[in-house]
Amino acid sequence: MRKILIVDDEPAVLHLLRVTFDRAGYAVRLAPNADEAKAALEGEDFDVVISDVKMPGTNGYELVQWIARNHPATRTLLMSGFDTECSKYPGSSDYRKIAKPFVPKDIVAAVDDVLRS
Image (cartoon, rainbow, N blue to C red; front, side, top):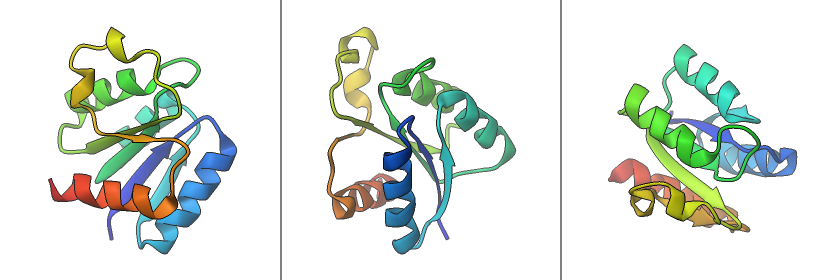
């Protein structure tokens, strides 16, 4: 079973994604912010991390950069309804992104694609 960590500061989004990925056969863990995501990553391995871009504190770009340095085998995918910070991060176009709002089957397909690549 594939393990996924979902990071978002919106409880409704976390709930929707938990249900979506549970139904798709993933083992799901949730984190409401980047600090809790980092703690989860230090305690267990995940196949993929989905993170919102805009969150209080450490944002999604900073989190995926940390993951790339500390857990390079973990795949990442960013989601954003509005990404005003994109130009601040060198190589930000290299990150896989999905737009919010999203259709649940599309985000599952995007994760499946990330895991195949």
